[in-house]
Length: 281
Image (cartoon, rainbow, N blue to C red; front, top):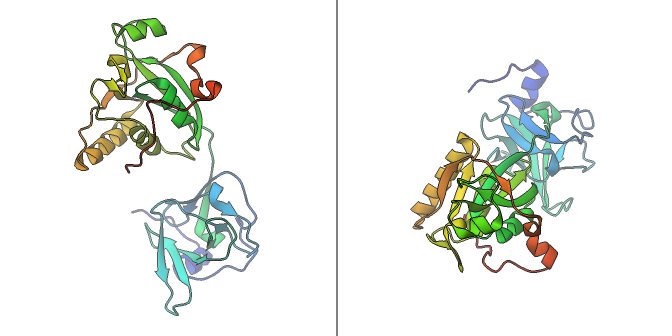
């Protein structure tokens, strides 16, 4: 791993486990949207959404990016040090039970141990077929980080299909939901996990009571990264004993469905009849 060059002050904090004076750090009273990185190795450590004002004099976070932080008990047995899990850089200490936030945790971090990467508002898209698009859209719209979920059609050989053509089964289209999401809040992997947890991905002839080729389970990936994530989760499900019927396809044109299909359950104040959430991962 390649490390950044550190100044003497940075070495004192990061490598010799020093502590900067309270209320002097650049990120103490700083609340822009983005990600905080390790000063030594650039590993993402914290999201700005988890930063809060504690009044302690150092940047405070009530959660970390999964797997980014390692906890090490101090030799005196009274405190718990936090270090970068990738390079071991000293960050500060973690405290619990103080009641500042609902998570009841405070990562007290030296500003000098951090770099900040400002949030770039670049939303991404993902495409999922899991039976009737009404229920799929319903569940994705409730996920934090999802900007929109739009019902439509993909995969057939007719341009600009309508609902009647798709329902005939002869056009080859699947009912699909286009999900626009903020990857600073929710990852594509999180979306795929939800996809598998809201429908029966082992069914080979449709979804629930909806039988037909337009209701089959599929993911249309937009790049190799989405393909790899999807393949890895399918492998994980197979190892759990599931016989996965979900197909993976390269991105093809998405055709938005008729207006009366959009936000169907919200407009009709009903709940999905063939989709329900079941935790698997």
